[in-house]
Length: 142
Image (cartoon, helix red, strand yellow):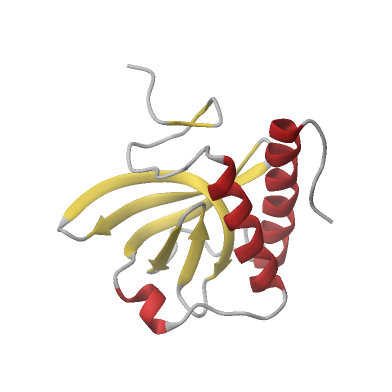
């Protein structure tokens, strides 16, 4: 068994929910753009989201991955490794392609590890642009 994959690349866990559809990637890029313009997810958006504990951010090639243990309803527990688009560890949320997650305590201090939320979003914007550009034959994002 080859394990979970996203965009043809293997991921580290079995709980990834990464979509390769162009529509999902376009929607994710719009949500990321809104976050970068000051939007924050509502408590309602996060209310039924998965909860990630013992998490950390890992840089893999051109995107950051959120790894950890995720609890979802109906009650299930999975190992998670999925492309990370945005994160606010202080507010306790993360955005992946197609999924909001709430976050518990990280395994490592992000700042001490040299990982900053703005850099995660910058890397994600570039990753999305490359994925979408490859699908359409050229870049489409500003």
